[in-house]
Length: 167
Ligand code: SF4
Image 1 (cartoon, rainbow, N blue to C red):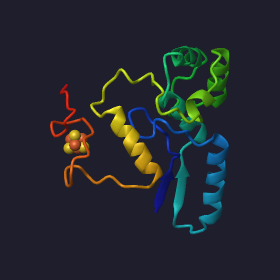
Image 2: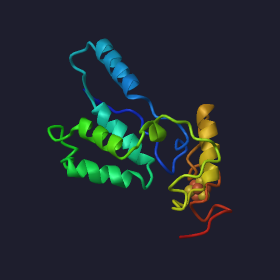
Image 3: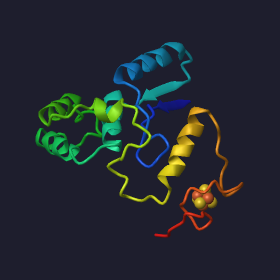
Image 4: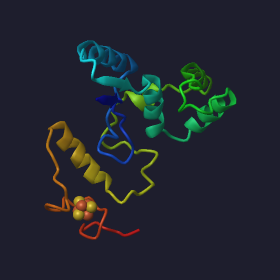
C-alpha cells in the first residue's frame, strides 16, 4: 500500500482562511512520528516536502507584496520547483528576507473574524458569511451535509440561495 501524506494548507475562499497553518517544526515532528510507528514493510509512506508545503501556505493566502518575492526567487533560479533536484528552499528564504517579508504573517497567524482579505474583492459565489459559519462549525466538529442530498444551508453559490446574485 502506498500512502502519500501532505500537511493541511489553509486556503483563500474556504472556511479555513482565518486559521493558522502548522509550523515547519511540527510537520517534521509529525513526519518522524509517523515513520517511527509505521513498521509494516508493505506500507510505503511518502511525504510531501515540508518546505514546499510551507511555500504553498504562504502563497495560498498571499497578497500583492509577494510579487516581489516571486521575481527575486525567479532571478535566483527558482524555476522548476516541483522537481526536487531544482527546489532550493534557501533561495526562497533569501528572497523573502530581501523583500522584507515575514512569512509568519501569512502562515501562522490566526486572522480576526472581521479581517479584510486581499482576495475579498474576488467572488467565488460562496459568501464570506457562509465560510465564517462553516469555520465555527468545523471548530465544533459539526458536519454540513451534502446540499444536493439534504437541505440548502444557503451558501450563495446557486439559484437555491436567497443571496444568489448570478455570475
Ligand atoms: S446555495 Fe446551492 S450550492 Fe450553496 S448550499 Fe445551497 S444548494 Fe448548495
